[in-house]
Length: 198
Image 1: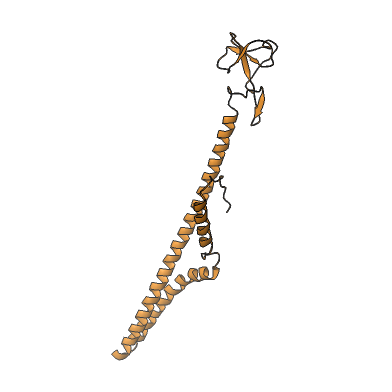
Image 2 (image 1 turned 30 degrees about the vertical axis):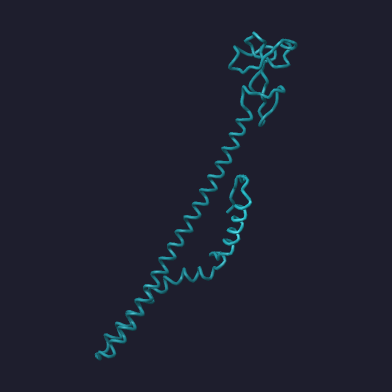
């Protein structure tokens, strides 16, 4: 699974060293991917040991039930009962451990997917914010009409006492004293140069 990461902020050299040592230590830990045989063994051990323990208990009971001598019944009950209970307990424990491991893996996968989704959302919001900041209408660049994010930004001016918006290169304002304005500051656009927001 690939993750999308935002650029990291600069970190102190000591923190980077600790992070590198921790990364190397974690890389050396065995995982389920590096030991598939152990994973397969744990998956099969619980379902096999539980019925085996039940069979051993039944064999112990059968051996004790088919003899009338007490000194022969006691070994059947002890060996069959204790061994069977031990096998059933071990099988149940392994089965439960396997179930918890599967649950933990599923939780980790969901957490990873949620983290990737959150990172993608953060990056998308950052791109939107940057685009909106670069293309703010009413705060055009001082050098005239330009382009930001694919949207044309027009430098709008008006004469010193005028209430009409003009482009800076409009023939009605060339050579006159002008001031930068926004479309909210004027009554309307000039009908000759027709400035617009993009």
